[in-house]
Image 1 (cartoon, rainbow, N blue to C red):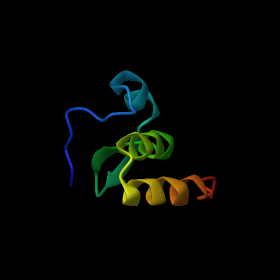
Image 2: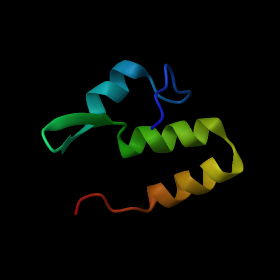
Image 3: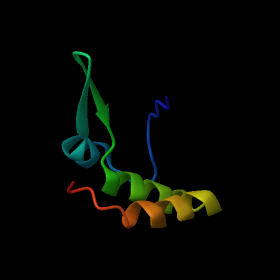
Length: 63
C-alpha cells in the first residue's frame, strides 16, 4: 500500500473527485482513478512508469 502526500501529474481536488471507492468487507477504500494514475505515471517519466501508463491506457474499464 502506498500512501502519498502528493503526486506529480495529479491535482488532489480533481483526483479526489474522480476516485474509485471500493468496498472491502464493509470497509470503503478510495483508489486513484485510472486516468489520474496514467497521468501520474507519465509525469514520473521513469521507463517502467511509461510502460505502465501505455498499458493502462489500453485497458477497457467499462466492463
